[in-house]
Length: 153
Image (cartoon, rainbow, N blue to C red; front, side, top):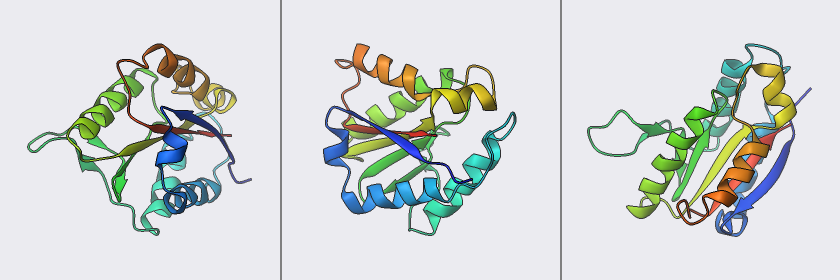
């Protein structure tokens, strides 16, 4: 079984992420062959990042000089965060992406998170698309980075 994905666009994220980069991310999702189950988050993460790296995406990128805060990857001005952990970490990811956007380090972002059904399988209070989509609408004035959200299904 290979994972598929759903798509949500925040502030024109789908239009701002170049087609070539979006395809690389979608292909990396398609390479995830991990069966969703409790404790599978780390394996999902490793397979996704490994596939991304073969397309030239960077390793972790720090948000500021001298900081330990980082995002998952960066390529051609597009910041990427993969979140397969606790939902509370999503807000930190959004703050990091907003900072990079305001510093002109990125022009758009991609968030890759489990869909609600997958999140319920792999753990408790895991980041998931349904909640992120709802909350991005609520925080539209505070978080205005063009963001493409891809949900692992």
